[in-house]
Amino acid sequence: MDDLLKLDKQLCFSVYVLHREIMQHYRAILAEVDLTYPQYITMMALWENNEQTVNQLGEKLFLDNGTLTPLLKRLEGKELLTRTRSKTDERVVKIRLTDLGLQLKEKAACIPMQIFEALKLDYSDMQQLKTLADKVVANVGNH
Image 1 (cartoon, helix red, strand yellow):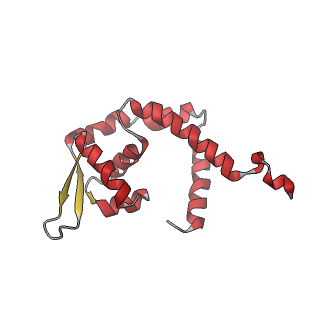
Image 2 (tube, helix red, strand yellow; image 1 turned 90 degrees about the vertical axis):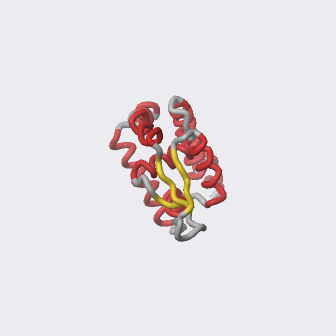
Image 3 (cartoon, one colour; image 1 turned 90 degrees about the horizontal axis):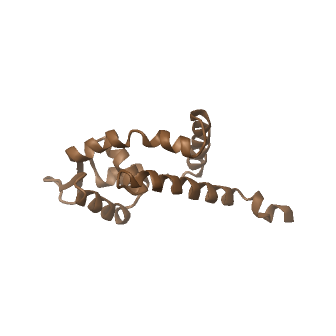
């Protein structure tokens, strides 16, 4: 039983180190397009569906409004998106990409392949890892 307390036996430690390694590579690659990782995933969600509300985006990204609002303000400051209040309900804020935000998608298209290469994984390895991570997230049931 004492063996279970060894660091190299801990799933949480492996996931922690993996997260750090992945984020380190993303940080370097995303610097080329002047985005942080949270900004990048926000842009990806908007590239998939250009017009959505802050609440819809928060649900998709698993981010609360307190985290998402400053992030959106920074992206708006970079002129990548606009935020407008709904005319029918002032509490609802709609987000829409600008032309500059839409154009950034072309520059960012190479990022996934750069990550595969940086992590020295082929596509099937990456899919396997992602499938397992998605399974754990789904099993936890908080999202």
